[in-house]
Length: 526
Picture 1 (tube, rainbow, N blue to C red):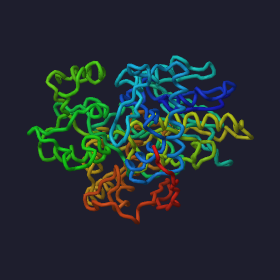
Picture 2 (picture 1 turned 180 degrees about the vertical axis):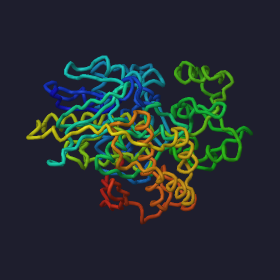
Picture 3 (picture 1 turned 135 degrees about the vertical axis):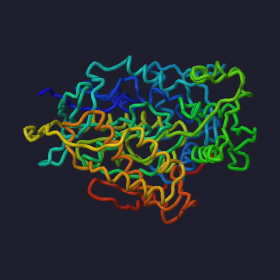
Picture 4 (picture 1 turned 45 degrees about the vertical axis):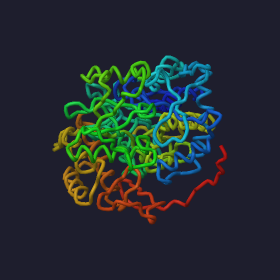
């Protein structure tokens, strides 16, 4: 049996930051479902938030994060995150990452929704994720082995010791491999592919959540899903993200009658928190009115936003006309796998970082440009923990791990049908009636105890989508209020009784757990 010390499932920024900081004495294997370049991190146009300017302060970043997320956070973790942000940027800069600079040679700082200061660091305008990921991939430590197009479909649990000991995978030919390691990290991103409109990479369909759920780990806050307000929308289909940085440069949202739709809706107008802007655009579309980003006031748009310009031109939208058609799409999961302050899940030996995990730093609605920051923060944090506490296997019996190739008759919906129903019944605006009807539809598929060894990759992906969708719907039904990325038309207001209540789900039970108020009192004097 090949000796592996740490297995990492996924190849986004959290995974790559982790491998950069792990001790090179470890044999590390990275397993990714598709190409190592096919991740949400690589697609990320937005930048990284960090309080770097003289008129900014981590305490302001902290307050903005709490305000955007409706004060539903693990405040202690938020404080550590924002305090670490400047150091994480400087660490990347010293390593050789080249950030955009102003005419004074200082790091150029942009502004995005719900930020009170310019604090967004970019690379080449609108390709931050791409260039950070390429830097990581071009500087891979020699102790790290990356296996592409290897789909992890099961977390292996040793029931005698009640710990995670490895994973099962399938390649493009559906051949099964088993890899064993004392430490397994889930870092596969979120759930964007559950919806027909999404900014996410096509491979992101909730695998991490489903893997952890089937293994017995706790999930939480699955109802909180962020819809990015501005995806390029042409002929009834979305074609990619129009970064919030465009609105940060002054673009405004108008409907087809040239009415500015954010007037009177929020003091920050187009730079209001994402759930506020997404709801207003969705409302206009429901009324049958197209919505556009008016970019006519932005000088040198193509120079500032080359990736977005190329995306628009590719899809027949003229930048010269100054009007980009937009619609909301699934962007980010604030909930996910329950982790502690370093990334440990509720299963020994199993860890989670990045969007697949719920660390509490995003609350009910993530602040713009805190996602790449979270990946960098927890990737480094988990690496430091593993470097200090690594333990090899102790008396684990691998003979118990069996492969069941018994054929099973499965009746499954298509991926497109799941996506269509997710948008209609559990999308931006939700009701008890629609959620209940959708849950009944989901429950007809008896998939909880299926052995996946003899099931094709295509079918496993659909099973994972159904499992993840079910957890989202159950949580959305239980939370009888509107808060952040969870909007209930039948309960349109925040309810104080739900303020500190988190919905926890395992494969055996669903319950509500009230966390103590971890508010960290700080004085803002910047």
